[in-house]
Image 1: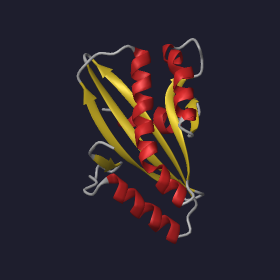
Image 2: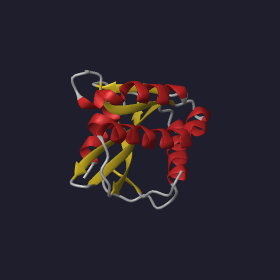
Image 3: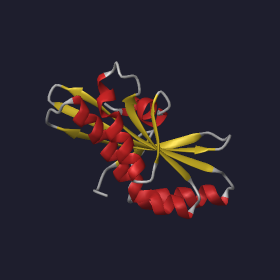
Image 4: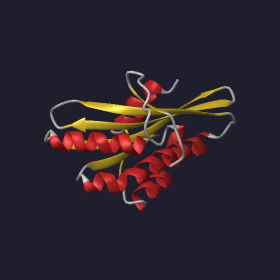
Length: 160
């Protein structure tokens, strides 16, 4: 995975590689006896010719709340909405793929969430079939709007 600057929701920067941070979290939560699930999603916002992407890794403890890690990146080029939706999916898959062995080792279920509307009246829906095929073809569980809270709510709130 390319080097990205990750942070917690509080704004605290992660100073070690995110892979090491996630491994430490999984070990700590496992030792505490917490059942975990992980949800990965990306959202984007267009500001003129700049697109801001936010990708999140959301950890939920069964009946004990959750927390997340965030990375943002700006891209200075325009792109059609379908391409932007598929770029969001690609970013989420890159993160999911980099952690799959770790999540499997700790028996942690993971889902990839996409900010694509299942209603065909929305423009983002044009990318739904390709996104679903891409994610499921990689072997990941998949959720789209309105059930994709990692991308539609969590990432949406931190895209600047």
